[in-house]
Image 1 (spheres, one colour):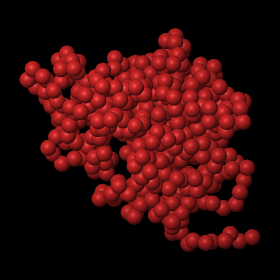
Image 2 (image 1 turned 30 degrees about the horizontal axis):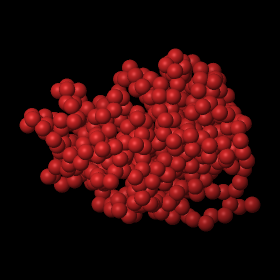
Image 3 (image 1 turned 135 degrees about the vertical axis):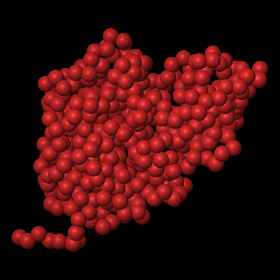
Image 4 (image 1 turned 45 degrees about the vertical axis):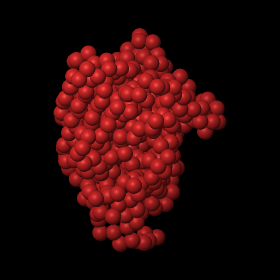
Length: 468
């Protein structure tokens, strides 16, 4: 029977990207890229474990167990070590990866919350080697970044209308799952089609309500990626070339034609430009936190003696402060005043920044009230993303004035974790140990870390399960 043609596509972007994804093997990936894949694995699992001190983490595990119909399966839930199906496990692990808003930031969003949980779960389930896992991780980041960049809005986009950050997140899960399932180019193409179908609509509801339900979206899109790939494995008709068909995906999310990004720079590894968050807070708060932290440590600043902190230029939607306190985890994470105040009063970075009582703690509220916007026009979110995509980052000037009149000032950009100021291997390890030991003994955390650092020599990824 002749194939029916409903759209006369003149492009082959989906086909070419899928051929690239299928053909990218471990031996074609440079050593520094494989090292970065291991460090991103270490960091993502570490911040997920740290989230175990936040009630939503256990809620995500409970929900995953309910989805699964109780315990039982081949993939491990990182918090507590329960066994569930891969699709159920990634709902929990993908959610936990984003709970502290501490994983990563690509030019577009948080691919680690999809790539790493999915690749670990599927590699466990299929008894894949560490090399297979690493190849799937790199492929996932590379495909995700290109799809995500193809639908980025124009520079003058109004974020008040809603933004689709998780609308392309599903590709971060779909691609590594398809890779580990051994799909050929046609099956990979169909898997991309399922990702188009499972794409959530762009919405401003999370920004408008500041609900921590936001973090569940990363678990849900991770799960959708696996479900789509399992459907491909069972077989269905058509659903190919979804990134080429008009109004199948691209035009639903952007008014600016950027399909060229789908096959752009396939000879380069764009995951090397991913920013790793040094602090448990929103991306655009990282630099001010780093500046204040470093000055406080250098000059022995007592937070109780601070008269005022000025952040210049301020950042759009990130300077919120409420006299009555903060209403949710997301509300606090997206507030520069709250995060800086919490950092100054907490002895180590982690979930302790977001203990519920701190949302209305008089010390936090008093200090947060003193953290104010400078006189310069604010950095807009879209402008900041464009700047990051072009290799730069917003420059922040912080002025700390003390009660005794002393003034400390510093200007800085590209904090630790920026691709131009990346964490060293030792710094990744130290951060992992800080995070993992919130929920497990140091000796156990060390064994898990050593396993991840030696992934290229792992014969069966199911061996990671007992380490949780």
